[in-house]
Image (cartoon, rainbow, N blue to C red; front, side, top):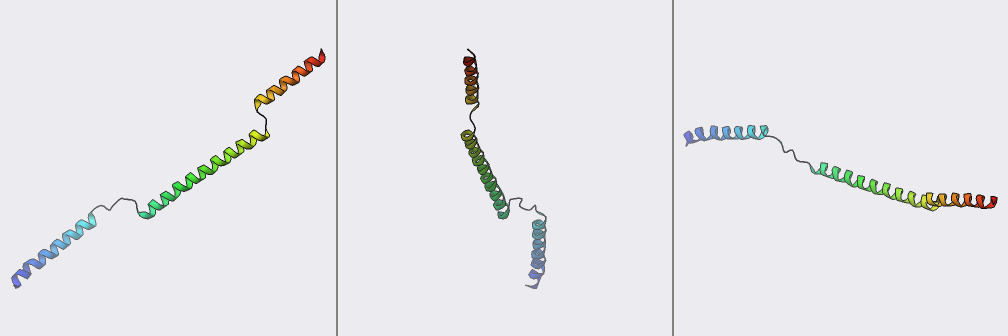
Length: 91
């Protein structure tokens, strides 16, 4: 029994040492952690929200300018009418 322990004990220690070295030297998992996934998701949602806010502000500004400023066609029509009035007044 003592001889069996003299053979098995060093074999178990050697196997544990080889397993430990193999585990320590193996490449680490290069996957993304949960915290990194959360940060990326948060950044993506923030960027989408910001883009939606910019789009809404741009649309509101366009609506406001359309209401407060006449279109170029209307301006051209008014200038043509003014020129026609001046011409007819001279006649």
